[in-house]
Length: 331
Image (tube, rainbow, N blue to C red; front, side, top):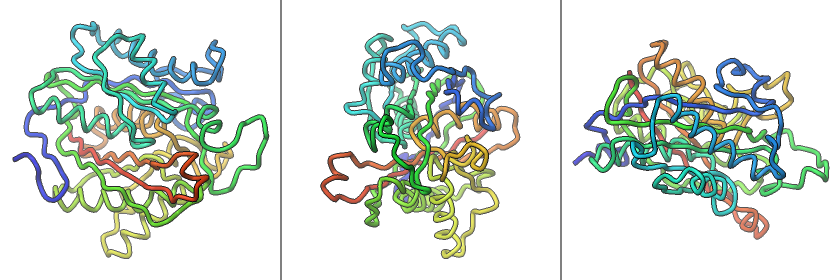
């Protein structure tokens, strides 16, 4: 039995995070991680005629560049696992159409990066694949159009609102090689404390992050050097810290959030920070992965967070279900 504790799967065989490739938008390139991204695209459309087509191009090019960088051909990739924020995960499916790789599409909202990596690790550990590429993306303009209001309206943004990251990250998992290894995977439970405000996603997702982090730490007993959540932003991050402090189990000295890492909160006017599938994806690929490679840290708990709502459900008065998936990675 490879399950440990209540919710965690222990990866017995080696599953290496072999490499990553990240593509970021202009605003992201102007932030603190600007020099870390593999590619920065200044044009919100990247030569396409819609934001949605631009987003699928982000995904497709991230995978292509990752494969070219490592001399991987299509026959060596057993599976592509991907997802995004748009209806019917069209960015992922249309990119997979062009890539012509065996494809599994998943929807985890902004938790997708950790979700795909967790599923990929289990599939490799189970002996069903040797090489898997996990990829996700988001785009500020396409997400705003779908989940909030058309940009053309010029609506005032709430101070609790976050800025959806324009970016994509592709991650190569393999049973062979060297580098950081995925050791433990905790898939979260839906946590919903009744938040209905789509302009306050950090508050909606924070309880799920707390629940998954607490369970992963209890299940594994690992003392991590760094714990990072996906896109809670300043508000959600403070809530998670408060919940752990109330438990007398503070993680404050080694905890951060991708939504507060990717932008300069004060200078870039992103209100409560970054969000979107591309937030945790690009921060992991461009920043956290390099920290592991450079041995600045040896044990990382990477946790992507997601809000599993829809515009229709929100308009019908439903609250926002939160989810968080934890990936324990060690050098």
